[in-house]
Image (tube, rainbow, N blue to C red; front, top):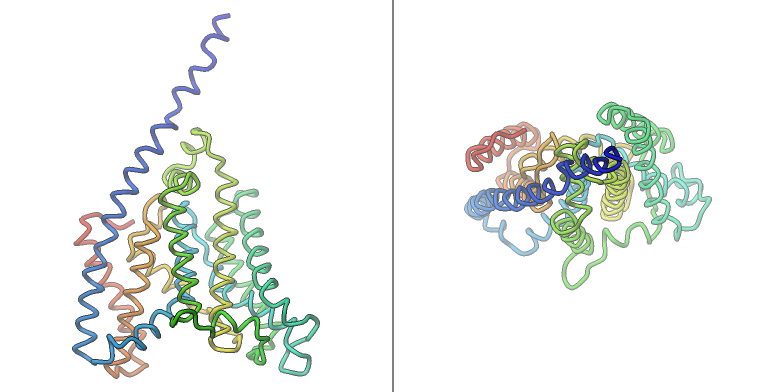
Length: 345
């Protein structure tokens, strides 16, 4: 009798309910901290205008937004995974393979390595499906089988890159169907469709992480997965959704770039993951999970692309831009550390 009376007590003692509340307070503080990059963006804008009056020209700014929109979706995808305490290195390969397989199956036979097995109308669904499949495999290996996420996605990165090289023969797919190029070339209300799509997806990400139970669950899992599980959060399910959504976003980003360039290169996406992590960390997203916001990640990638644009307008030789980008990322990290007053993890 006494056992049945005391049985519910441990569940009440689980520190679940208070955790989301404290976590929510932490999220609100993080939002304020993410604004530290806004002054840096303003400073870069002023410097860019002094370097070249073209910098604040409408066409130049639209060009910056369009070229960053594709990789910005990778940053958004990585932010979802990082907040949950994981990381996905394979996003850059999904970025290339998803549109690559679509091009392989839909580009007319005889045009490069295209097989021409399906009509162009299937290109976009195939691209999205590849993203979902890659994310599902990652989720099965990491969440269901409990494998190390870093190693799994590193292996997946290599496998997917090899697949793209194999089906393309190391060459570039040209002659893409119109459906694959639509989002990369169309203009809506004076702005490229890719920019609108990127802004909408980031807005959805801000709402999702900041104002929904799913978002709070991601922060709780990233902060302490065991405590989140004890609080009743379905950790495995939430993590799986985050990994699949991230791969899907990477596929959409690859579709945007393929449409803008009207081609899919065998090397599409290679090396992007370094910029993605840099933008996320500069934007305040913790590599240890549980910290950071989508808005912060957006300001991080925006800052990096504005700096690249300033270097280009300043006629800095292309051979030096890589080294300067790395140095600027380190400086931005130091400045972010100083202004935020918090150690970066």
